[in-house]
Amino acid sequence: MTPSLATYIALPGTTAEAMEHWHDVFGGDLHILRYGDMDLQGMPFEPDPQAVAHSTLTMPGGVIAAGDAMGDDDYPLTGTAYSLLYTTGTATEARALIEKLEAGGGHTGMPFEKAPWGDWYGQVFDRYGVMWSFAASQE
Image (tube, rainbow, N blue to C red):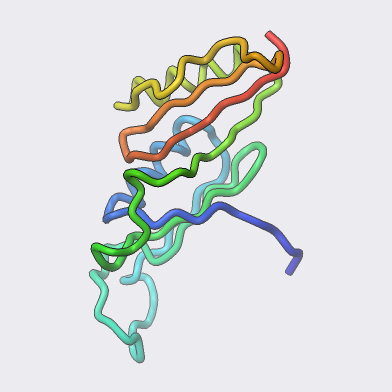
């Protein structure tokens, strides 16, 4: 297997919905494996068969992996200081993705505009609480 690095997000029972939404926004190749799709003998806990054990979205520019959180204390999204940074070729491409995330129930965290360092930059929180930062070097 070739080494790779992917962002992994544990979502509170909304992984399949979130991954399908992000697939609609960004495109790419989506794979979802539910606990009910595999042999659960020997598992140290009894997961909901419909819960997502592992999923990947291989999209232009990167990979997002995710699974359903198995407890209330698993990696909370709200109040964390992380974001996913998506760099596009142009500001127009970034605006189109931001609009899709907002149309899907997201909201602006920081307006997408010319930044002091010369590039375009902005942030949007999607309906799952994930902060997406967008950057582009040209209009």
